[in-house]
Image (cartoon, rainbow, N blue to C red):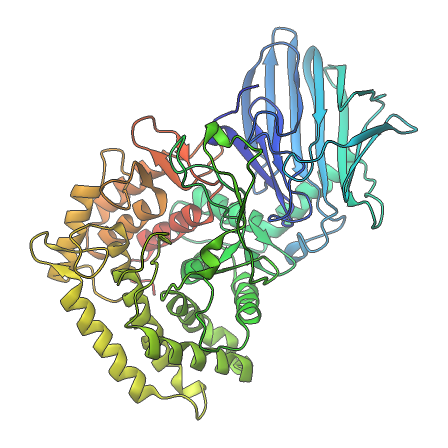
Length: 594
């Protein structure tokens, strides 16, 4: 059994977890308990990793789209026998509206088959393999035609309207027909073996309710700027990557999708990164509402806890877990034979000096909205982070791209140290007696002078990735975005031109460095922002529209795009790619945005 390309998948979500559905009708990834829990389907990472497929027996031409304003996916199959639509969704709690979406998701996967024309023979193939394919479940036929699958701590119940499902060894292999005007609904409910039983829902009724829940959510979120359809869709994707119970935003739905096919840079992105915090906050502020931004901020404050001497971790689990140690699933082949497959991410152990700057930038973004709620714990966090930066900024670290070789003095890390103290100074009147704005200002200015002196390379004519390095790095594009330097500054303008010339491509994509084999979507949107701030709106708009062209047919972005083939690479859907789209569109709308 082949694996579809990364861009071949559609994303559905209940704001508790998400699933990936291929154009061939196969659900190849679902971790039902929450985004970073164990999978029950992982054909995404191994052709024999488990799946649930519903599709016509005959070959079909496929059209698919989301129901407007939702992550409910409708796929239409056109066959010689007729046409049929399969609508896929993860069920919302009945009655959920607005910000209630995802708070009590029942962990039920809905698949509703609707006959459009003719009479189409359909095939259902259900082969669950819990715990990343390590467990082969027992399947038991149930009264009424359902099937119970149990293995380890997992219980799954598959039901179909009027369908007598039969077990065939370790799978359900079922054929049925759908005529024009006929609807057949299936639901797959998850539960823990030792907990309450799986939910029992009517799939057709619950699907309609789930559509209304998504539509109700979008109704309370407005965006008044350029590229409205793309921004609203990216905001919906961000909502789908949000673990509603805590407010944390997962960096991506998946683990170990490769940066290069057959390569080893395959990491688990199902956690929430503080490093991405201010960009995420800006995107939520622009395309959602302050409620989402403040919930994400509250999650971060709780997760960080009291500040000590130890570096603040760059990422946490979705409920604030700190230790998310990495291990390798040696039994999985990996997507496109790209090994290893990793669960967990050891980047939590790294020193990344940019993290406080991201958090304090977010505090500054929210400070007016927070009003009188600037309480003791928040003041302590701000002062603690500022003091940590003041005491550690001279140290080397792993940098924004989380290198696993050696620590360096990365330009972006030093700039975010400057951001941390700059924002802390601005917040000082609200921080109480422990604030030390005079000291912070002196160190901030020292950091700035050091970056301007050590980060610039005269021979290349650009700010480079690390002090003393001759290697270009697209992270230098971040300097105008965080207002360290204006894009019109002569050295910054030169840096933008050199990065665009040396790291850019005719396809509008920007690589992170010269040997990077793929374009990095976020960096491409950073270049759009830089061009806008440099006064080149027309060029920025043309570049923005080129980058938009690399989304898949459902408007989804993974992390990267292969420069030779144009296929998407890396974990998907990638929050930072969609965050970059939102922020670049707003920059095109309002060049002076903070």
